[in-house]
Length: 306
Length: 283
Image (cartoon, rainbow over all chains, first blue to last red; front, side, top):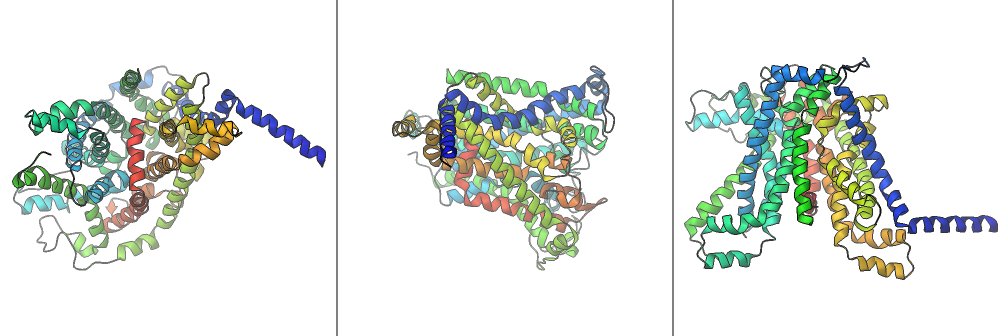
């Protein structure tokens, strides 16, 4: 009994000493994270690069085929359209989100009754599962029962219905509208947090110097808000460029494959058709863009720290 | 203060804000109205005469009843909840330890490791879902909740680590040093002094992680196949459309019920959520 206790004590003292070393403690604390991220991020990444260089499909182990999948994708007109759509979608949705989000942030930065409630409800599109709210939009864009068509017809703006989702061009713009609706609150709330750190005295001083509202925004608010804005825009570009669920629910890539994004097309080829190699290659086409964006952000963060 | 004339306040403030509120909330209102509208009123052509388009005179719960009787919706709710809670727990555990190590301890490669965790935060799930599906299949985890419980932390841990690291940096080092002088071990100071102070940060990270896993779609879509194993977003998309027919009443009822838990959690912890959201960006 006594021996056991002494043994245990010595053991625990060893453990304590072990934990007193910063390096060993750090290693211990970081192990779970590194294991999980290594297993389910780093390993899939390497495995994805290998898949993209092979002709693997479901039930077929596959052989090395070099850059064949990438060349094949580049020659595929649907892929090119998907790539173009992805750039178009990201570009316009990000601009709308930034402009509207900034506007909303400026509105919410004023004091008014019920501000907390309004601010909380403005974030709802961002909280509610995107797939579920996109279904509501799909129902609002329905070819026969669209409430938006009804409204526009009743108010006299249209005489024939708008083919919201049954036309590729309209479909893409509808997706941009829904994406803007969903992502704008994120911009607004983050920019609002940035606005709240700006000292009101600066505005006071500027208005005493005769600056009007627009000038105050452009010369006082905007320069101070630029760092936050850049970070938010980077996040948004990454999420929008790699978007999947919104298009999957809203148009499914149709009509006639005209509204695919890279991610939905990769899903169609890689999962629905089972051509894993080609699907992996298509999704890897996102990498250069993401890489540039992340690189810009890291450089910027370094500069801030320096 | 800058003084404004009333008409200016209307043009520049009340009207735009009202438009924002209507635009933001109308889809949710439409979800609710569709869910309680009887089928006979629902399928009325866009040009038909309609006296009550924006509300209904005959509210009904039949769509909700159908949802529970004809689909496996209750299972989806439970699966989503279970997966979200467990993966959030795992991610908080990992993020708490890793965040502390990165914020407080000196060790070789600390900078590199911090940067690489930040980079994994920016890796979108759609980049990796095809190879991951292959790995999940090889591990025989396909069609089990574990496929998601183990993969959701890949986007939750980096976020939690990043957020908590920022939080730990705001706690003065002296607190720990005092405890250590009083004889606490390094590990003891961490668990008994620092972690309790970090509770608001942990709560922010937890709420945010919970809503993220409740929202997740593509992994759940690819890794799960039997109807009763699915999560709410995937179940609603894949099981409630039979052929080409959309049962909109039922779909909107499902969307509404699937949104309520996460909206409730959010409404109780708005401030923590907002801290998490803005912290996730600033770090």
